[in-house]
Amino acid sequence: MPSAARWLWTFFQIALLALPVVLLYKAVRLFRFNTLFLDDWYYVPFYEKAVKGGLTLHDLFAGYLEHRIPIPKILAILGVLLGHGDVTTQNGVAFATLTVSWLGAGLLMRRALGSWERMWLPWALSAWALCSAVHWQVLLWPAMHLLALPGFFLVMGLLALGSKRLGFWPKLTLTFLAACCGMLSCASGLTLAILLPAAALCGYGMQDQRMAKRFCGILAAGMVIVIALYLHDLKSEVDRAFAYGQANGADTLTHDVTTLLFSN
Image (cartoon, rainbow, N blue to C red; front, side, top):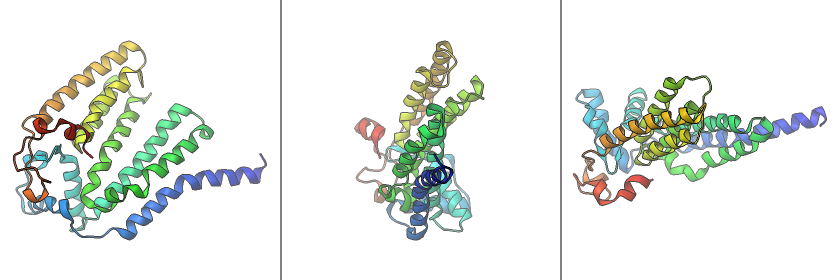
């Protein structure tokens, strides 16, 4: 391929990759607004406690419908405090989460496909999927930043799991932490307790089958403990205004396991 044509082709590839991220950034910056809407009001008491004192671990881990969401709560509180009351910092969290997830997906594709020529197109397609306007609610409704987090932590867990530089225990620790953070971001993150051990058992990032079984066994045991703690006394503890029909104190797990596992 002539030099000029090669440069044009490279420019086209990079433009196709970068354009959805740039357009998404412009859209979020243009259309976000610092106004509380529905579930955004649920976080207000936590902001007040963070400023005046009295914020407890129970506040962070208390059941929110079928979820336990300390990670989104912490991010929301930090964002509002650092932004001096600006809730659109959560829009920034959602955008950053999707963008870093896309970059992580590129690293995973690089490992799997090898050369740039083999990976650039699927990576570009993943950019258009992750940075799609379909996600407008996640990006423009501040409280919904939690929906982008499980996928982000799945990508982070896979990056740690597949790393050739990490030893057994650092790899196990980082994968376990990624799974826990995903689970504590949104109820759908509970699927990470299945996906990451399954990836290890299938040999991803493992030197041999013996290591795969050992890694999967330890990780799965840890996941069982975390899930048991997650589900223990899980009940809706939100005000009726944010409960979507669930009464305060409703036992989510025994009423609808499907909603718990596949919500959002």
